[in-house]
Length: 89
Image 1 (cartoon, rainbow, N blue to C red):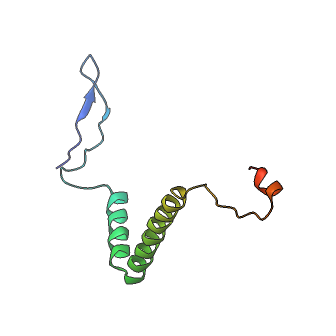
Image 2: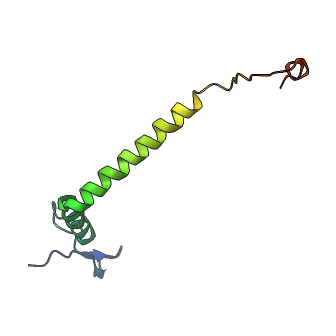
């Protein structure tokens, strides 16, 4: 049994068959392959470990930058002479 329905012109003559529509619930082939590849990578132990290490390094970098930004810019300078004390930076 064919699922193709002919397209008719205004006068009723058939032009060309319409393409068959995919059945409901089926996925396109590229999606099936992509999901399979993602699931295989998700089960790979070395991939999971390297991903976790990368995420830890990113979080550590953000925390380190936040810590360094909150450090003050005030410096205490010791001087020995009166002329050096007069020079202010």
